[in-house]
Image 1 (tube, rainbow, N blue to C red):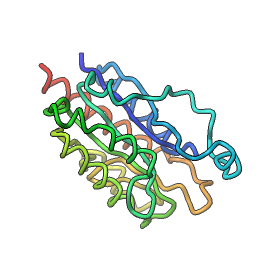
Image 2: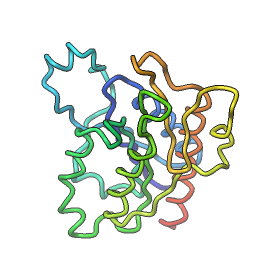
Image 3: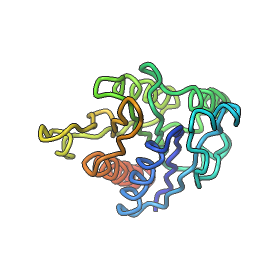
Image 4: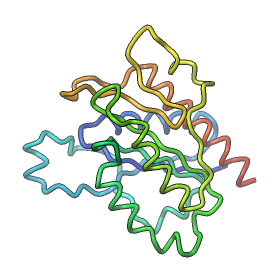
Length: 199
């Protein structure tokens, strides 16, 4: 049975919701899944004033534990077409793991959110995937076996590079069922790939 880490950063809760859906999909495919987040870098008083969601139940991850998993699925919102600095800072501390090749051959995947349909989701996915490839990981996207991303009947996220959601400029839009199903689908694909590679 493969062990999977869903590692995320979520300022307003959208990625937190997507992370739970990714975990559901991976568990349904037979994996043991932990959901953890990276540390917040914004001072508490500023985060509160900006209405950050600070009551997230997921424990904070450490760099050292990353090598204990067969797969790592990373979720973080887009910031001007790249990953938010909280996740970038966390991954920047993984030089020791990289130097030892501790993540070589493990499975990696990415998911994200943006404020608008064209707000940088795919660029952010690639900024995450770049890190995964440098770590020597095998990358799983969100293929069109998730047909929901082809819909024209409603606004929806989704990309062949990973699950996405659109939060709206004011953050009021929550992940839709199509987007959550995409996250579950990607989680299941990662779990199956990890099981095959760790067999």
